[in-house]
Length: 398
Image (cartoon, rainbow, N blue to C red; front, side):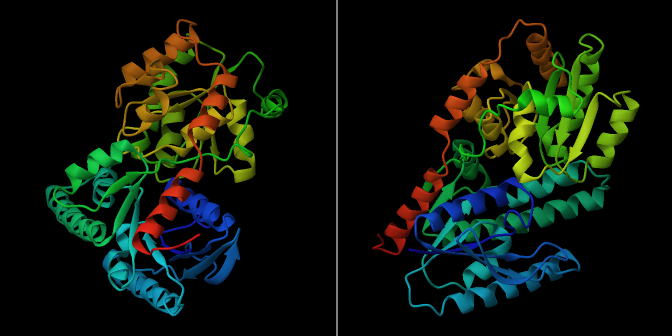
């Protein structure tokens, strides 16, 4: 089979859950012997051109610099040119569009198409704008832009012969965001690589090397640092508990636009020395970081489409407390519904953490968390879904 992924980014060139999802799926297909290509804009100032990675042929074009409209046109033209070159092959091919940003380029492809939906373009745009100072005129303009984004996304979804998405939450939400006819929707979930993410026997040594005492209770969150993730709320809850539980520590891993606000909050709340911003954690170090924690916290406010950090933490044996935002209940409720708390409620988060720290709520054992993740989450599922889409839309295949 031959697959062309059209995506806004690709791990590890760009950091983000959606980019990880695409890369993991593409590489799993390549490992099965399929011909797999990924077409995407290079990271700013990053390397362009063609090069293979883990069996996937990458086609990277320049990341445009300018206003959004100019970038959109330029990057779609560049993507369209890459697709035109790749269409010269006589091999039956399935185009997999992974973001509505490339709707215009998708229109230029005249062969079979699938859409891998990993997030709503307009809704994520509007959420990001809510946390910025915006006057009335700018808010009206934001809604105008979001309306165009929805139209482009709806057109892209309807152009596809098959629609795959990563959670039941997205299946239900798609009906609200894009009412009317859509192609058949299949939930393919997400996965974790249990050969990499597994309970780490070096947990105690890693904690000690990072200055975490054996009797410290270490909380962890691994997130893009932006407002949708609820991280300022997490700091407020942490501050409310730290006097009551003096051995409490918090690591926050990731990068993003809210980093400055988080640093200011750490200083304002007097949490220096108790909260550590780890920044970007290299892929090779993630399993040890997850394993070092006593509990991972995922306080998302909304639009949580899947949660790779949630399943990776569980695979490393570290239990997760998560808000009921988006798809998180799908991941945690089967393990233990008491791991969930109300989204956007600092009081609910503080209370749930207090129950854990005081011993009134027992977290699932590390062995149980790891076994649950291994049994429930595999990258074979999205790869299977795309193979099925190929057979349905292209035909044949082995």
